[in-house]
Amino acid sequence: MVFSSLVFLFVFLSIHLLVYYLINPKYRNAVLLISSLIFYSWGGPRYLILLMGNTLASWFFALCIEKAQTQNAKRLAIVGELVVLLGILGYFKYIGFFLGNIQAVFGVPELIPNVVLPIGISFYTFQLISYVVDVYRGKVHAQPSYWKLLLYSSLFHQCIAGPIVRYETVQSEIDERHPTRTDIYYGVRRFSIGLAKKAILANSCALVADTLLPTGTGAVFTQVTTGYWLGMLFYMLQIYLDFSAYSDMAIGMGRMVGFHYLENFNYPYMADSIKEFWRRWHMSLSSFFRDYVYIPLGGSRVEPILIVRNLAITWFLTGMWHGASWNYILWGLYFFVFLVLERFVIQGRMPKIAGHIYALIVVYLGWILFRFEDFAEMGCVFLGVFGLAGNGFTGLEVQTIFMQNIFLMFFCFIACTNLGKYLHHKMFVAAQNNSTMLMIYSITEAITPPILLILAVIALAGASYNPFIYFQF
Image 1 (tube, rainbow, N blue to C red):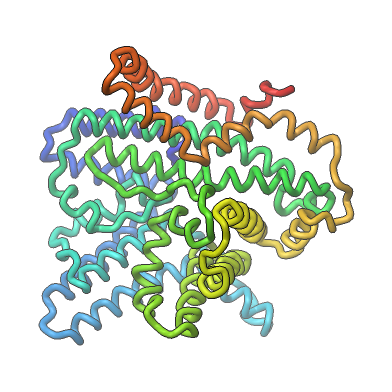
Image 2: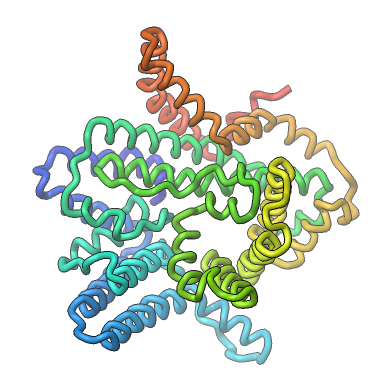
């Protein structure tokens, strides 16, 4: 079950919120926990045991750390946490990748096990590791109640697709939270924005990208130059709108019940450098690798050669976290190269406009590495965007798709900027001193969530249908 489904919206979430607000407040955590476990087990009940087991291990090691009398005992517990959780993650996510590479080189083993990746394991593993490490560092106290830690790790708002919520962010709200009407309204509004962004914009972009550059079919080898460019442009839009939409929905649902999750995306395509891009993109993941990998390695407070080493390790692991395939590792190392260039060569000397163009081009080309696991397809697309694939510059199909989706592209461009947020703030400020603007603002705020929900439901009801196709020249 995913957030952008009619079953989730009209059955699961509706029933959950109804029960949550009708029941005695002292039982609301129990309702939230039961709902989260049901939600997680929807995609495979057997993996619920894995989630509960990982949480049990983290609960145990955190208590061991807090009760330990010596530093060696604390170190032993933190090592135990890392071995257990990273070992489990490594088996489920990477065993096929590692054995496949060994087989390609040495011819053994003869058979590679087909291990199914449990839903959300990368997210809740990192959350639990950050919790135990923060207990080790003394930033938070160990949670004495196992079921409350299980609530933290299994919260259905974010355990599947993030953001990676740290325990320190929600520790007080697990025990006590009092959502106001403003919280509930903001949560509904934020969820509606995310759902519309996913159902209307991201899904439509995916349809165009998959039409122009389908993977695994061989069709990419015959595409024209403009087809490569347009297909990757829509993929670039899709991946941001998709990821940020899930964060919007998670933040909104959390706010409805009193949790204040931190922002996860801050309009990354407005960045003026790759360093700034990664400060804006999937911020919970970037900060995790910064705080739990890069800084413990020495961060930037070491000699230059060690800074390069620290960046290389961090970005190798960042790429690997995204998937068990060489293209993701290359994607991570690709950004490592540009971050090193920015730190030691460019050093902020690039003008703002030039920096913005440079960042967009680097990110755009990087998404080619991210999309294509097949190296032949990847190489063809790289050649294609530079006009070297030998298939011609343009064609009727690409021109038609472009004209059919020009309005979609325009709205997606707007959604990738802070224009909407800026106008909303301006309207709010104007409403403070003008009764007419106050009326307009109030009406706008009242009708925005239901309109977005209705449009999103219409889009979800016709999932293979692109509503923008009828707005064309």
